[in-house]
Image 1 (cartoon, rainbow, N blue to C red):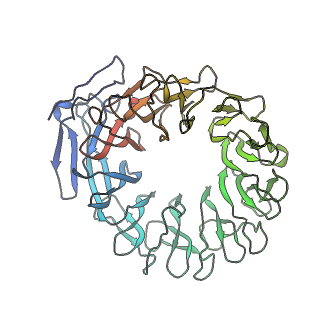
Image 2 (spheres, rainbow, N blue to C red):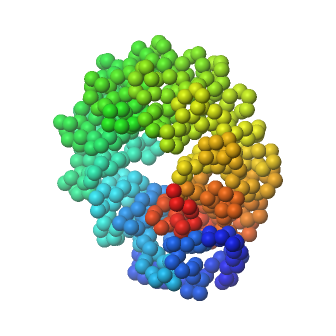
Length: 547
């Protein structure tokens, strides 16, 4: 194997391009265990977790020509748990990746343990509940059911066959995400008798049970999505009598009840877009049949579940979207029928619910999008009719809502996008005629809204169209880009040109196509293809400035 050729710059976080793949040693272990590390002479440096060093491959979970396609992920007892699927033919699996203790002079090493493999479907909904890992998978025998693991292959088993006749869990694209409250997992499932209802589990078979048969009999109440408010859940459900309305639950049968029949009778107010500001103010959007779909709030009691404001008077909808809490203010977009789709704000009463600014006068509106909170302010993209879609900032006042930068006209598909908060900064992508689409940063001022680095110099795009958002780590970000020479590779930055680094994982013009997986205390894990297949890699958190 060729040794890596590293190009170091005078920086604590080095920019490098590998001229060849690093030497690797795959040590045999038990049948379900493999380990991977760099060769002893390829140490990535002293105290590897405290210094920025090149990314390292964690393990070769799917030997060539297969690819390890990562699905769900979570951190469990200091280890990384991932679900994977190999499209070539070995099926889906659940893996545990744990870093092994090493001396300061030794390179990092991980043990990869196969907890469950050969599955026909990708495991999903990985959640840590107390000292147990709960997830949903179809093992090809029991259908889609709830499983439990203690982090060992022997301790990974079916928790309960909730629906002996078929699947307990519905379509992954439409089912609500399970949520953890304390040491209990709440989820929607069907036992084949009662329809899809609210269930709970503490990780034991006896403690896995239906909370309440909300729509009695074989009908489904289809609870969700779920909002955790302290030790209770708020969600929408249909009991077959009142239509789809807001419900609440403390995890007991008696404590699971209709919050309010907003649209009286069998009709549905269809509450959605739940967002919590504090214990007294939880906002959502619903239709009471008189005012259209408008902004509502609740403190969890029937008396204080009420309409905040009829923004678009009458039965027409105000098209509320993008609900975002910044400080003690709710920001959202709405159309009052006069000003078009614009930025609005509310603190929870009709008197303080208002149009923030008519950014683009007229019925079309500025069409704000990607509302992103940072401290007391909200950042967004809007089109004032003169500058096109550009980054804006608002503190909730008319005078405090302003354009940050006119980046210039962008071709279709390359408009500014993907606002991401990292520390006290906002990163996003923008296109200019001189630089193409690249990574930008703003501190909330016009002068501080600027290009981070022209990664592919000149008008060519360093960031492709319709890009994935940058991944925040501390006050920096990890992202995918290409410089026109090395293909799509991992990049990371502290927001400065000099502090923007990369690694050529797939040497030459090939692309490793990195995709972030999860951030732990010491590592940013991501998937990448070094030319031998897509696998899990790790980059020290030390490569990023602290938040």
